[in-house]
Length: 136
Image 1: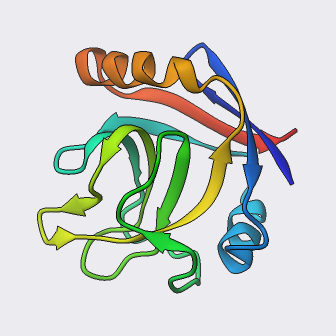
Image 2 (image 1 turned 180 degrees about the vertical axis):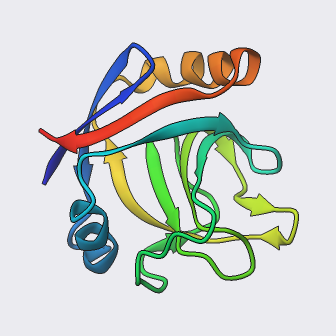
């Protein structure tokens, strides 16, 4: 399934990774459109994240990694840290104050990767930015 993701004034095309993370994709797809705020990560490197507190998606680990590439979006389903969605824009070693984490790689951006560092800088220097996920 194709997605459209808007962060601040930037629009990205994306693809749900339905073969590699079918349960995560189905759980997220059921929540579309999904709107929140991204903030800059504290421990993980070059990424922005959506803190989701105790929100439950009802999924376990699938297609999980601690080292997403730029443009890969992970869902951490909760456990030792709060539930969150992370978008890598550069080098990432996914972690929290509890230590290393692994999240389910369930979305990949397919356009606009060159704009990701700008999103990262803007979020770091100017604060939270609106993000919206919707079907394309």
